[in-house]
Length: 231
Image (tube, rainbow, N blue to C red; front, top):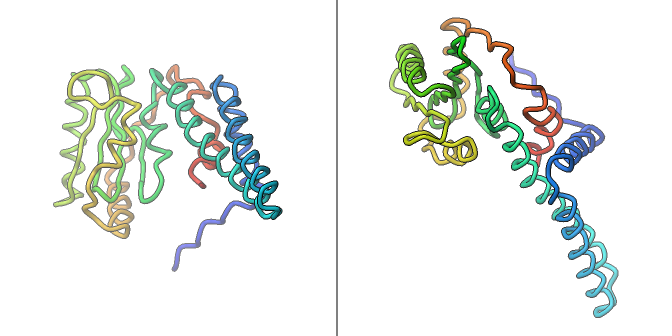
């Protein structure tokens, strides 16, 4: 039976998502509102000047469209920065970043975990399988090794990458995690991504992510993610 297509967000829902992202960013980024004002004023002023010089009202409309586009670009960039600032140093921050990845990314948080709040998260993507660890480097080496061995039994020849998130040598910082992941080569198709994620999901239930000190506001509200991803 064919899988039902997910419903697209309505125009009103999209507006609510944009508003959520706007409010989230404005509360956490003092530069955000000044940058928004600049993003609005410059295109509108250019449109008015072009209208006065050329006499066509089309330039006013062009100025309005460019202003809206500029605001969305500023919001997207500053919201990502605000999200990283909020998440950095919190338990589960890497999982929060992973869950904002767009495209063929199937993310399963905390496939391995310890009581000391070390975590290994799994992402199945066009690169293959990516295991992302956050926590104590010594314990993570063991956790990543265990999960890589378990995953290889199902993944076969599919490439498996392991990454430790942190600021020590050989680790990838939280701020560079997204760009690092996007640089990975494409080794499998989108159809293979879905099939592999289904097979990996059947090899056993993951340990629950403990209710650690990570507060709810350690990442943007759900609507903020959708607004950033929906652009």
